[in-house]
Structures are given as C-alpha cells and as structure tokens.
Length: 112
Length: 108
Image 1: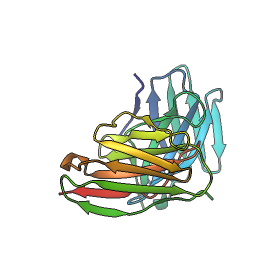
Image 2 (image 1 turned 135 degrees about the vertical axis):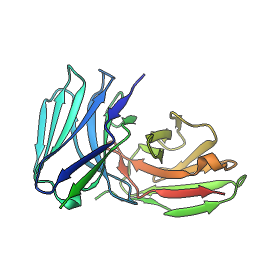
Image 3 (image 1 turned 60 degrees about the vertical axis):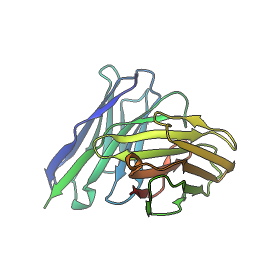
Image 4 (image 1 turned 120 degrees about the horizontal axis):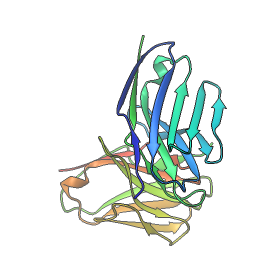
C-alpha cells in the first residue's frame, strides 16, 4: 500500500540551511506537497511539485524530486527561528484534488 | 485567501456522548476532508467528500460518520464517543487542501 516516511527530528543553527527528507512508495503519485504546522495550529501549505518536475524553487524554499528513488526533499535556506515547526510531506493519490497520504512529520528545531 | 473555520479549538466530552465537529469553508470548494492527528502517526484520513451529500470512507472511518448537506459545511460525527477518539481533528478543503486550525477533542 501507499506509505510516506520522514525522519522525526532535525536540529539546525540559525542561518544554516535545513534539508528535510521524505520517501514515498506509490510511483503513480501525481503531486507531492510540503506543509508546515506551527504549535497549536492547522497545516499550512508551503509548496508542491508536479511529478514530472525535478526541482521547484520559491524564495528560501527549494524542493527536489528524485522520481527514480521516490525521494523528495525540502531545503530551507538561511533558516530562522520562525521556521521552527513540524513539516509534513504528502503524496497525492489519483487525480488532482484527491486523497493525500501524509508522512509522520519532521520536527525542525532552529537554535539561535 | 481561503478560510477554513472549525467551530471549536478545544472540546471536552464524556464517553458515550454524540459529538459534532463542524467545518465551514468560504471558497465554494467541492472537496472537503476530515483527518485526525496523533503523535507519531501523522495525519490519518477519516472521511472525505467531493460534493454535497456525497461521502467516501478514508483509512479510519470506524466510529465516525459525516454529513454534507451544504457545499460549504462538512460535519464529522462521533456517534458514541470513546476515550480512544481523544485526538486533534483537522478539516481541509479544496484541491490543495487548505486546513483549519484544528479541534483538540478530549473524551473523558
């Protein structure tokens, strides 16, 4: 069945780059997403990438997709303390707007 | 901006009660979703809906039902609440799944 795996924790220093990794199993995934969850809040969509793309850049965020290895990563440049949150990777099953399968989330801790 | 509003941020109920969680969106989206979030398990899909009066079971529908009488409102119902349904409940709307702030539900 479908599965999405992420490491649970990542700690970086302020100003460094953060790289959060994700692996997925369903090769028919059409879109892959990154969401951010701050304490006590819902999930906020950060960015998404279509499965026929290798890379997408949006300001400090860079998404890399290796479809052969079913590996997705999110790089945050110049990480700030405000980036401390839980980051979820998700894959879309079927058509646009359909069901998403989420990873367990990676808790990013940014130390000053 | 899309607004997804969940009726309560925190809710405390007793075992056996019937519990209603409400979610309203303001963007005329057809797709709406209910998830529960538990530590170490990520988000798990309970039910979703692609249109009014239409519902589909997600991965963990047992003990839950849903109602979609109007396009903007998607309700999650715990028919007879149990302690193992204590969790954070998240509603999402639209093709890119915009989320509400969640309802932290405790069943005593």
